[in-house]
Image 1 (cartoon, rainbow, N blue to C red):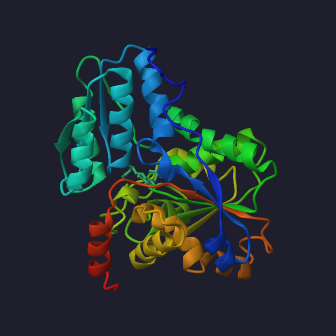
Image 2 (cartoon, rainbow, N blue to C red):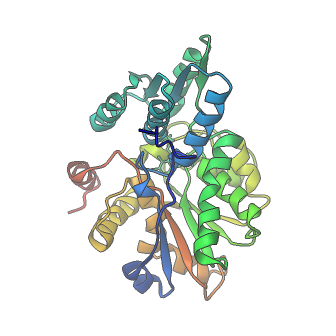
Length: 324
Ligand code: PLV
């Protein structure tokens, strides 16, 4: 039996036209379904690429701090590469994610209240000989991997969409998509970059014109919770058109529920933030304000996915936010 190893760890994902979202927006909406990636989110694109590169250079142990999804992508990559992995998550991370990581054969450590604190621990561990730190969002190799998503869009659509919608945590997805748009000559496509209030480090940085460190992460979208966005994400906003917007947790969670009912796909609130751009009427408002073109040829929403969700967790989030 051959080892069956594909060149990449990620798969080419479907681009589906959403009838429900297109009806709502009055424009064709395409879903880039990163939720069907092997490790449950787009993260495998960049992290898989990064892990393959450092393995070639002799890495003997991978260590990754994560809100969850980057860690699962790193653990999955480590298993494929036959390398041990240590994943550092903030305390209070979902037991399902911990179980999944252990199922991948990774060692799990819990450190700190938010990702930034777990990251300090991961960097300490990475000082050991042969260990390599896998940054969940802040590295050019990560962005290079994420850019493959735009190559697939180009192959599927041919001509550029009117706008692209995505969620921003540490800004790796944004930086990767921006790099991809430049590669395929689509640098004029506006990116609507959505965060939740309480995890809005990119919005704060854009406003200040420099990196800003949030005092705390208060959003339920833990996977968007990097207190400081990557410098590369802020920088790319100078090269491509980025419209930065912030939605409430309640809007993100309600978008998760509506998307489940409309498309029968369950995603994390981190992904709900991007979907809320349509469900909460944000895109329409941006068009009315002249911040997005009107009409729009089509809109692509990056359904980034996420593993920290199941029916019980969705119910708990709704109860916490006073939703039925
Ligand atoms: N999550 C990172 C960082 O967390 C992680 O460790 O998994 N959507 C989902 C489902 C995500 O998991 C993430 C990042 C994002 C969006 C945002 O991507 P980014 O960080 O590249 O902007 C603290």
